Picture 1: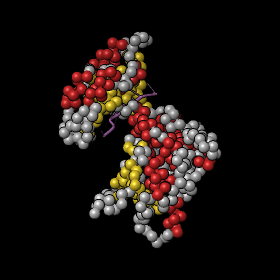
Picture 2: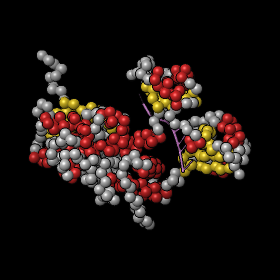
Picture 3: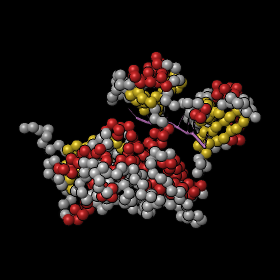
Length: 455
DNA sequence: TTCCATT
């Protein structure tokens, strides 16, 4: 039926309204088709805009590739059709580079010229927005890993291009997994579940899993808007990542309620709506403390005692953190919070304090040495989330994210004040350099007001 | 400053 050395092709950039029967005529002209499958979402059945194609003859695949790949654009598509061996056919990894800090003016050709000396280039594309303006970065794929590595060695940081804010970045491009994680963060923040206690809990992961399955079912029944369907698909991707062990949490299968269920809400405030923990089985990524204290003592002290030096987050080597990426985020965040194994956040200490001091609405500063400055906060972090982030380290007097007056957008920095310097120091130790996504928090003592005016 | 999708 098919030759032993047949090649499975990946077909990309096909309109989502084209099914196998529509695609067949396009490809049949190059030979007899053994198998043609449009790739669909596992849960929603949504057409993903690409397909796999195997010809009976290897020769047909080669002919189709040279005749079609990047050669024509199907109706409704912005980019030319892709016809190339599927990833499963050979290795495609570790030879593609991400190039950052390009000037906005550099073209594909400019970039190609820069990288040509290091080897044979398979692809070279400057990333552009919808309006065609360069995003200041590019992908360059070499034929071999060694060539790509050579380019990194020579070019990375070698110079600063005109119009770029820092020196040239040349590194291996994100893997599929890393992309997935990035997307996950985006979705999480869009859904408003970015707050510290989300994503990190076993209970929440199980909850997410339940949501995913429900959403998928409901989406299939066409109850949901396209936006919600997309969300469901992305949630499913999150679950897939989860299942791949990136988030080291056991997943308990959920049987969705059948029949006349109301479409669940992906709520803006999911935390209070969380169901009881589901099948977490006491799993915790935090190692037992070495000091002989019962683990539960460590795990349940948030907001009650200042954090100890043995704080798992504080103990992490910053270099480890640099490579741990999102995994670090998911694993160490709850540790920093002392929240692992506890499904719901504690009563914030600030609430009680505000209660005691109802009149004082001012931003309160603690004494000198008690106030910390936090920079590189996630854009979507609010006062409350920052408060929660720092509660484990002591009594928080105030937590304020600075907001642009015109746009109401966070300026991504803020201040937290404690009632004693030790808490501030503990917070700095634990959270300075803490990685969230691709950024790291900068946490340091707030400068005294007159710091810049020595006299 | 991370893309267009890889059962």
